[in-house]
Length: 260
Image (tube, rainbow, N blue to C red):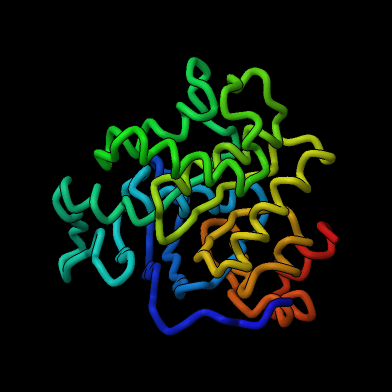
């Protein structure tokens, strides 16, 4: 397990986050903090609320109650009467720009080349000049080992290559935090390794990362902290080495026995 090299700066603060879809309580008071440079792996059975929690952090889903702050700036909070309120739409967009997200199914634009996929948002959202956007994109494609694919369309890429392009696209917006939602679960096993290598390199560069994953090896070797969720609750959050030695909770222990 890597040493915990994060500093004291709180990058994500979630307190008592609750979310329901209809009558189904998906998040039941989840609280988690992530510090600068920290890699947190969120694990647990399917349907435990992991992906919903991630989507709430960057406003892809709205919470029913609780408190979310990104780099010390409040995104949503709940008053004493239980009323949850978000900051203005402009502030939501500004705070949300601090996070980049990589999804399970890549979400690349099929009609754009790899390079065009990367430069679209920096030009449209950030107003970056095309030449500067291309230079940034080319550097990131080189970083993920795909410089030679810049003019290819997504249909010509393997699943692992598509996911690495998706990572580069998220990094192209220069976020302070990267959120990964099961980034390897849609990949064939032989393609998983190349994506995990890219994520390991980001961790070595001390990118703050919150990763929902079923890859126990990645969680054990790369994460500083492992957070275990089940049935909408965050059951345990412990340093990775301690968690895998003794998760400290029977539900987490049963999950590990099934996964390892």
